[in-house]
Length: 308
Image (cartoon, rainbow, N blue to C red; front, side):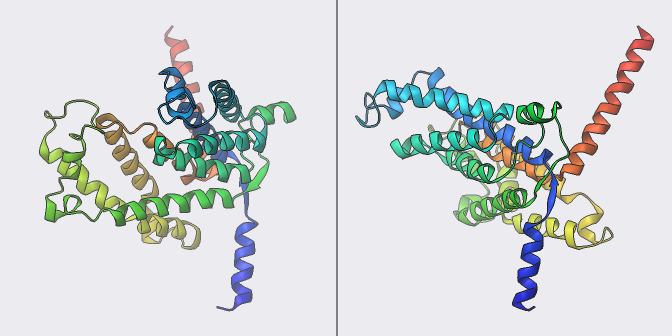
């Protein structure tokens, strides 16, 4: 394949347009996660302990400056959720997250990095084209069919692949493999720093199945990326397109994260990860799903009125 052909294909990929439903849902979910990351320390009155010069590290901003930064994060992430301010509200939320991560890196976790990566992507994307207050103010309607660039959604999908494939490769200790009896989760739910409650009632075989499922699922992330390629480049009769393997993969991931959320204390990690899943479905699928849901609601409402 010549360099000119590669460049032409690259330009065509970047030039693709679609409506903005997927990016809008992504924006709302990421905004909720960012708001959570700011509000929870405020609610439990540990924000100054973590980030202020009055805390145990003795560094960072003074308490009054910290409060301004916290409320700026609340305002900007709330604006993100509402879809007000476009890229500006996303950028302010991003700067607040970077600010707190810089003060005390040890007080942050994987969820902060996931949120930060998502915010950088949303700064580049036009995520308030629809399902936003911006759209309402511009057009008089909450939704719009205005086209936006598709490549930010593609990047989000690729980020999911990189994240899961990398974490799968990193799980090389025997406890994650048959050589250690798939015992990793059994130990994790009993670790003092992770356990949500006493897990002695949990059957050992359940933790083994969950460990094996997680390990195999992450190692198979490349299949997930191949399935997306097939949906775009292969005919509907291709084996990867005969069934919606993408949704099956997503449901597996959702179940895995829900098990982790119930059994362990990982903060908003599960929710910050699942926010990226919003980009797995094409905007046309969002609209079709909404039409089906609306149609069923109308039918149910008619039946309710007839029986009343």
